[in-house]
Image (cartoon, rainbow, N blue to C red; front, side, top):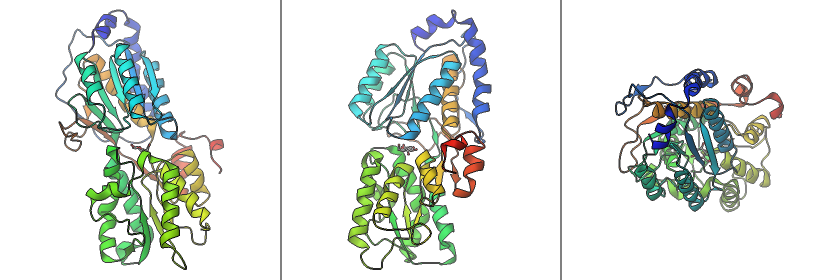
Length: 386
Ligand code: BGC
């Protein structure tokens, strides 16, 4: 805990009450059951410490993707309700901009940094500076690699996201019953995002055996021979535009004549939007030859595409749940309490295994939009083209 927090500890008697409410507030906002937490034994409570408001720096990658706006505003809202001050910055997907923002937050004497990184390998020096000032760092959604100076990680189970997409394709096509061959075009996420390889591996562990058996055929040849080759089909920056032009190129070059694509593995919704546009541009028609198309996030435009039949599923990540978990972590760190984690094996950042809290993601299909996304209050009915 920084000096700044220690100084305000005595001054904020009322904040203790507010912070006490954070647990209740978090669980009220948690629609999905969370995995049973274990406790990171590294931190123990100092009895004389009373939690108090502090300044929390929140660094988000970009405003251009819908989910990060929700992540940022949910987390900021929860922390402010709990009596913290916050500084929330978005970095336009520019690594240097994010580093400058983090440096400014450190100079402002924040107590804790919550960072959803753009390039998970680029933050070592700035986080070393944070560590020298005793500022704790929580990696938000994306792991920060190659540094000692990241204390905790909270995310959705990234491998499970890919497994859900792979299983959906397997079931919809009847692959386990021997159906096929089907034409598949696989995509992967941004090569600089640590999550992207987990998403791909989760899906490819299910789909690659069917590629090898010939039930899935990849006409473009963009079919990684193993999980390690995932970045060869990665879309830098997760942009819809790059995904659209890549899909357009594949369709133009490998699908002349009668050949049709039957299924597209898209790791997330921003890519799925671009892929759907390319399909539309090439004359694919919903209800006739539109392929299966996966996604992730439950972004509004994609849910509307699901309603319109242009996307088959999304792996929904209820950002309220992640924000609530991170707000709880912040509170536990400030109070000097044990910090809840439930995975101390998976997320090795090259220097250490970062204690992690993993939240289960959930498949949403056109049939479950109302029950999952509207009844839970994630969207209002008027937000969607129902
Ligand atoms: C997140 C995804 C998101 C992607 C693009 C990943 O790190 O986990 O939810 O779709 O970044 O922003």
